[in-house]
Image 1 (spheres, rainbow, N blue to C red):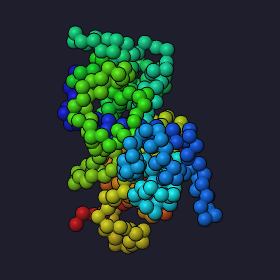
Image 2: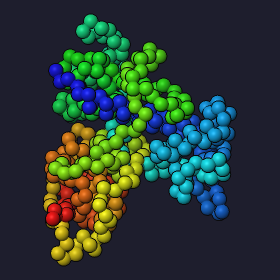
Image 3: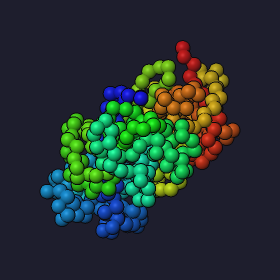
Image 4: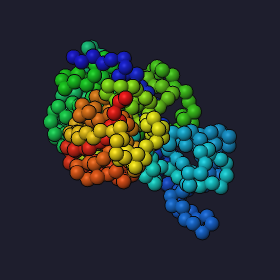
Amino acid sequence: MDSISLAVLKTATEREQKGEIDIIGDQLRLRLHEDKFIRDRRYHLRTYPNCFMAREVLDWLIDRKEAPDRPTAVQLMQKTMEHDIIHHACDEFKDFKDSRRFYRFRKDDGTSPLDLEMMVFSRGQRLSEKVMNSDNSLLQAREEDGVKYERAFVASEMVTWLIQEQEAKTRGDAEQLCRRLLEHAIIQHVSSKHHFVDGPLLYQFRLNFRRRRKIMELLIKRPQTVVESQDSPFCVRKQSHDKSANFNSVSPNSEVKVASAVRRSSMTSSSSSGYFSNSPALGNSPPVVLCNPRSVLKRPVTLDELLAPGAPYIRKTLTVVSDAVGWGFVVRGEKPCHIQAVDPTGPAAAAGVKIRQFVVSVNGLNVLQCHFRAVSNLVLTGPRTIVMEVMEEVEP
């Protein structure tokens, strides 16, 4: 059997923490919508859609006993800004103030920078709910190595179910999807000894998506190990880190830089940026984007400079065929767009896609004048195989 490495366990633990933060943010957003705090607001003859007023939400947090005092409530909302859950309605301020300022959830305006790690997370949440709500015997009390586990499923049965539900076309695709879910802390082997393998091993959903989170959890530093709790029958919770996961933006044969986007995935929230995924889940939910603000470019490059005669760039044509969870790269910038991050284990890296390459065309359509969101939409709505022309700087 395929034993799981410490590196995979550590990364999954970090991603679990990030996933918990996103769940807290989304639960807060839905509650504020229910209580009519999020609505279109006017200021100086201008309408700001789907906004909330800072002062009103701080009052709400204290009234609902989500925060013990006003300074703590401000600190909680500042945390949501730092994690790109909310932003100022005009993006003029980077801090959250106890004032009449308008703020907005990024999920409500499609500005949440697309993070394909989050796409895996959201698809995992959808699959978890689908399994819980379906009339099948996937989740049962089962035994492995003499130990009994509640709500466990057999790997081979899950693979069969994914194919039956048209979540995957082949057993290989389904197995690969489950491996991604494990790497993103959605599922885990019951004793955390093995990666996902299509066979008789037992697995459980690691996160309890249904648990009502307290907003104060944003300020709690989670220990590295947590005793497994029986109050969450849908999950096995073992480890967490007090930091969000980072993705290494890499060129397959050169240096590594850290960017705040993560891996390929399939998210129920779609937008036009980030790790491109062709998952069916993409069309079924509201837009969410997750930012990757720090560019990997060594310096800004203009379109005129890129196309100037004698410029130190060569053109390459690359063919990328997506796997079960996507293509595996991130595009950022505009006029021209550039490759911001590449999953070193994904199809893009295998095809020769590298960071700092500039995107010239996608499937024959010139995109040099396009914003990265337009390029993203072109990839997401196109065929599984993309032919991409890029320009790459010649090494001196």
